Every structure is written in C-alpha cells, then in structure tokens.
Length: 506
Image (cartoon, rainbow, N blue to C red; front, side, top):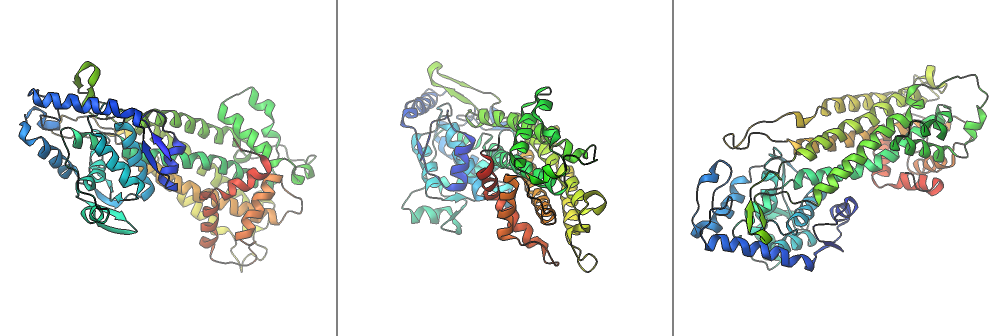
C-alpha cells in the first residue's frame, strides 16, 4: 500500500497504482494542515469576506459575489457546468493516475478541501470505481477543468463510472457500496477540478513507457548490429569519455553489454569494411539524446506531481487566500512536446535499420529476409508499416504548446494546450513501440541466416522471440507476429530476458 503525503510520490508509485491496482492511504500526519485550510475558509464565509471561487463566481464571473446561502450550490453547479468533455473515454490506468495525483496535490493542505472528501476519492480508487472521463476538452489552463470535473462528478452522485466491469450511473455504484453522495462545501468543487492532473497523469505514464522503450531501442539496435554484421567499435568507451553526454554514455555501455560474447563480432574483426552507416554507428549519439530528454522530462514531472496546482491557494498560517497561476500547464506542455519529438527519433532511426535489414544490397541477407522470394514477400511490407508510423509521428510531433486560444471572455487569455501535448505523445509512444517490434522481428529473422552466435544478451532475446514467433519460412499474417512482440515489450518480458544475461541495462 502506498501512503500519499503530498511530498514523496514517484513515477513508479503512480504506475503501480495505475496499472497494478496498488491501494493507497492518506498520511494521517497531513490531516492537521488540511483541516486548518478548511477552517480558514469557514472563517472567510462567516465574516462575509469576498474571496474568489468561495464567495464569488469563476473566470469572467469572478466579480460576481455569491451569498453564503448559495455556497454549496455554487460548488455543485461548477462541477456540472464544467463537465463538457467529448471524445473517447480515457483508459482505466490514466483515470487511476489522475485520481492519485489529485489526492497528492490536495493533501498538501493549501486547497481548502475536507478530509472526508479526500477519503472518498481514496475509496473510489481502492475499490476500482472509476469515473468515465472523456479525453477531449481541456486547454491546459485553468488546469484540466473539463476532465477533472468528469472525474469529480461521481463523488456527488452524478456522471458515470466503470464498476465491476460495467458502465453505470455513479448513483448506482454508490448504492451498491452503501454510500451517500457527498455534498460539497465551499471551495471543494473548485479544489477538485482546478489543477494539471490529467496532463500530468498521461505524461507520467508516457514517461514510464518511454523509459522502458529507451532500453528496448538499445536491444533492437544491438539485434540489428549483429544481423547486419556491424562492428562494435563505435561503442568503445574511449569515444564517449570525450563527448560525455550522460545518455550517450549509457547507450554505449548497454550496447557493449548486449554484444558481449558475440561470435559474430569476432568473425569479422579483419573484414575490409571501413565504416557502418549512421543508423548503426551513431546509435549512442541518437538514442542517448533521447535518453537525456527523458531524464529532463522526469525531473519536471516529478516536481509537478508533488506540487499544488489549483487556485486560489489557501495559506492558513498567514490567513490568506491568494489568487495565482499554478494551474497553468506550461511546464508540462513544453516537456511533453519535447518528449514526443525525442521518442519519434527512436522510431526514425529504427526504421532506417529495418530498411537495411530487408534490402539485400545493404544487408548481405536474402531479399526481404525470405529464402523463397517472389512466391513469398517475407518482411517486405513490415518496412511499409514502419514507414507509415514514422511519418505519422512526424505530424504528431508538431508542438501543441506553441498554440494558445483565449477563453472565459479573455480573462484566461493564454493557455498551455498541455493535455493535447500529453495525448499526442502517448500516440507517438504506441507507434514507437510498434516500429521497435518490427525491427526486432526483422533482426531476429536476419540472425536465423547467420551461423555464428550473437552476443549473450541478444541470444537470450532471440530465444524469447522464437518461443512465441517461429522463424519465417513461408508467408503468414505478419500482424499476428507483430502483436506478439509488442506484447513482449509491454510486459517487459523482452527486457527481462536480455537483462538475465547482461545485468541491468542503464
């Protein structure tokens, strides 16, 4: 069980909650601060103070004063009016990630939310009562208002949820659990929806998948180096000590580990080939630059997920409510666009290696990796698929963060579009996974034509693939093979098989 305290949430913990269903609990040490902020809000109302979002409307209506008799109605109306999402529902792991991130921000005690309300979100999460949240509708400031409104509606018995494998009205799920809908007090509706948790949630899952794919890209590249009889000379540590980018050094170290024990490398030490193509020779430089990007994205998202991102902020110690812009998603928007571009490059260079594997003039392997070409097309069309995915990624890599459009009658006149950045990056990462799976399939087939053994890590990878996908002797439906290898990547089985021989890849 993960204790949520507002300070120490990590990427790995979010993934465990989102994808493994790990339970969470509120840190009881945080309760005092949470209740102090609620007490201050009660004071504001009792003394008839005008405070944005508590005794006023929202956005352009921030100058409209709301009487204390309508404080609860204001919060309910806020959730209903802001739940305007459209498009497909986001995935269960993305919803769970949103929920734990919102809990983590609110428990810091600067948002004016009750402990009871926080506990209800925890109950939903732990019992897998997942709100239906549409993907589209957020402009990334004031936070992810639209999707977070859909996430919060079921707490008050509105909206829909997925529970026990069925979509149902949230009121029905609450009845099944013997729970009554919450009645939100002052500031609570605003606290629930004003934040960057959708873009951050999708971004965190993107980041985790990118970290895995960076190592898979090294494995795929090492398989291709062996199948194409490339040299391991460009991975010599002396080269990378004098251009010591951290990612470049990590990739070169991984390549050495994966190629260790290779008979293929020994067999052509004295060959007359002077240099390999860039897609082989520059693996550390290209893959490494992506890794450095991923490392930077990690630092930004780690800060964001342990931050307070709503408005106004409640400071009990100084008895202040301060309007601010912490809801603005620009930090996430920029780095998620950056991540999208960086991950696209892994697919770009992978596709070039795929082309070399299937082209007999470049590979010295049978055309399209099939013995009986003509009657059989072999792996010819896998390269077409890789090319299509790479080109799609180029379109998706256009940064969403360079766009802005005013909202709320120009009160909110600059927005981040960070949620669009997050979902674009997610689509790119899916495409990268497919391209790398194609490269691994092609390289495994290429290795079948080489009598010498590859490096110990690659040998283990080849064996894992062949347990699911037999060598191609005659044409068959290739998409089935591709899905199987993608499954090995997603489950991290392929990574584990390599690391069983190499030790942990960096």
